[in-house]
Length: 231
Image (cartoon, rainbow, N blue to C red; front, side, top):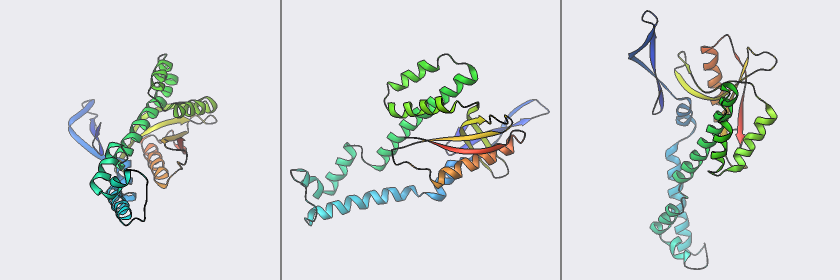
């Protein structure tokens, strides 16, 4: 199970034929490792603060001019900070909104996968309910990709881990190769705006999942990996 920025695993006792809840191994999440090494979350807040200070300074020096009473807001640091908070424009607000949208699209992908693997007849109903939440363009794009690709699903939302490298993560989708079903392709779903591209961190994440998958299931190796961007 997931515990904060790590996954906790209970060891399996072959002599007893069950998992030993008294022995737990915690492995850090792939995404947390990448975030710590490639991104510095504290820098985001620093950039945000410097931006507020710069806008306030420019407004007071009259090098920035906006008509109406809004100039009073721009001149006062606390008022400007409050305006960003009310309008949900702080970095934390943007990240939270993006995370919510991302979760909804990920759930839809998992629903499509379960519908194929398990023959879940409630898949269409579940997707229709999610469409009511909003973000229809993302769901439409995901549905179009699914219809065009006609993927053969092996698993979805599956946890993989590497005891050699000591990390764990959750794969969004694992597809079978149509030519050789013993080989798989690992898919990681990302959401974003129209300019969203494949980042270095995305490639590192799928590579880590593929390495863990091969360690766990050498009989069905990962022959390819891809990042699916839902704009």
